[in-house]
Length: 80
Image 1: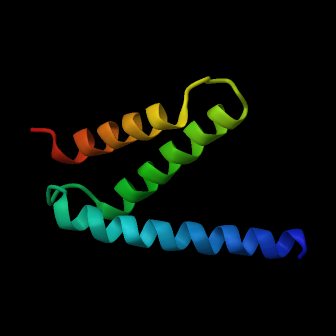
Image 2: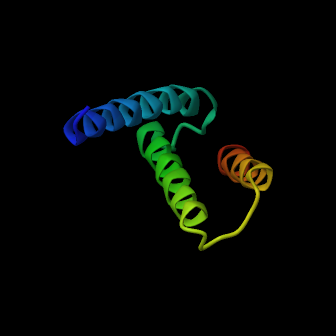
């Protein structure tokens, strides 16, 4: 499989994840929050944190990463 194929698969996956997140954000977020922009912000946050962890610029175990991301995303959607 060539790099072009992997690039296309990555783009397809990103598109799918963003669509699913957009639907979920729309269901729970305040009406003044743009669901697509929020979904893209979540994806960007996940991608950048993953980069730092894989590059060992941040040393943290998987459970801590998942817990932190969950709390940040939850707080961003449900804060008063």
